[in-house]
Each structure stands twice: as structure tokens, then as C-alpha cells.
Image 1: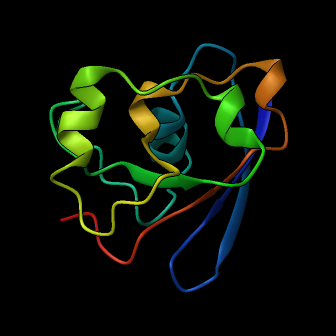
Image 2: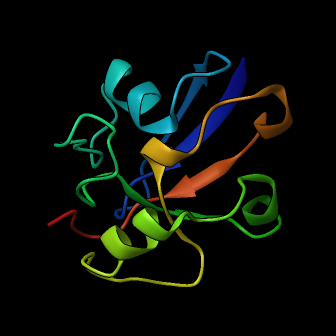
Length: 106
């Protein structure tokens, strides 16, 4: 289990516990977090779960795959710390992770 903080573009914070092995996109959807759409169901075939990983946490979330990078190239507001939440699985090592969301997922 990992406690994840999702921060909407407007600053609203949502802290939820996501079970180990569950994607951070799925964790957001299961907890009704606004700003994460997950249109492709977690297949890295869209960019509607685009998030910004805070600071030192980026290295802990792993490297972007080639497919993830290609999808992020289509996202609005791409930054160096951009990730697809569907490509990050919750783990005890990610307990306390902070994710920020862009203004739009489209």
C-alpha cells in the first residue's frame, strides 16, 4: 500500500491509499480523483492520465518506456517530470509520492 497525493491543477489535494501493484491511474479512478481520465484503460495508448512527478520521486518511479514517451509527446504541457500514471505501479517505496496534474488531459 502506498499513500499517494494527487494535486489538481487548481491546487486541490487528494490523499488516497493505493494497493501495491495497482497503477496510479487506476488508484485515481477508484478514488474518484478529478483530472485523471484514463480513457484507454491503462494501456499507454493515450495521455489522459498525464501527471507531473514531484522532485526526488521521479527516479523512484522508473524510466519512461518508448511507448510512454511517444504518448506523452501528444500531451499538453509536457515537462521533464511528466509521466503517465498508468505506467507507475503503487509500491511501499512510493509511499508519500506527490503527483500534480496538468490543466487539461486533452
